[in-house]
Image (tube, rainbow, N blue to C red; front, side):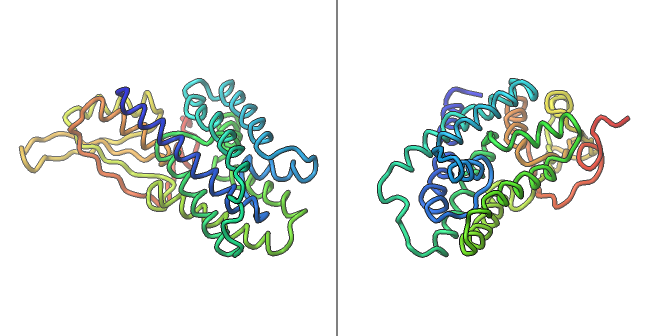
Length: 285
C-alpha cells in the first residue's frame, strides 16, 4: 500500500472514531441511554464507582489490546491500535466541550441521531479494515480458543452490558436506549455491505492462481474456481469465488490490487452462510 493510501486510511479511521465518539457524547451519554461495548461497561463503572467514562474506556481498550496482541497476534493488533489510542482521547475531549450534550431536549431525536452517528462511525472504521478494539476482541478470542461463533458471543456480551445498565436506568432511558442500539446496528450493517454480515466475492483476473493462493494462505479463507470465458477477448480462464466476513473485504481488495490492478471484482451481500469456516470448524478434516 502506498504512503498516500496509508495516510488516507489513517485519517478515515480517526474520522470514524470521531463520529462514533460524537454520537455517544452528544446524544447517548447525556440522555442516559443504554450503550454497548466498552462505553456501556464504563457507564456502569461510573455509576457504581464514580470513575470517569473516558478513563474506564481507555483502561478497557488497553487491556483488550494486550489480550488481542498476545492471543490473536500482531497482525490483528495493528488493526485495533488506532481506535485503542484515539477513541478514549476523542471521547474525553468531546465530553469536556460545554453544551455539546445539550444539542436537543427531545429524547427521540437524541436516540435517532445517537444511533445513526455511532453506527456510521463504527461502519467507517470497519469498512476501512480497522477494528474498534475493546469488546470486539473477547468474541474473537473465544472463537479462536473454543470455536464459539463470534456473532453468538458478541450478542451475549452486548446483552450482559445492556442489562448491567438497566439496573440504574429508568424505563424511558431503557426504551430509547434499545431503539438507539438497534438503529446503530442497522446503520452499521448498511455502511458495511448493505445489510450483510458476509459477502460473496467473485474475482475475474488473469492472475487468478496468485489471487487464489493469497486468499487461502494469507487470509485463511476457502475459495472456488469457476470456469469462464471472457466476453471481450474470448479467453478461457477461471474466476475465483470466495465468501468471507465483510470486515475482511478491505484486506482482500488491497491484496487483489497489488496482484492485478485491472482485476474485475463483483461483490454481493450474503444473508446466510453454512459450511466449514462459518457454521462448521474451518479446520475440520
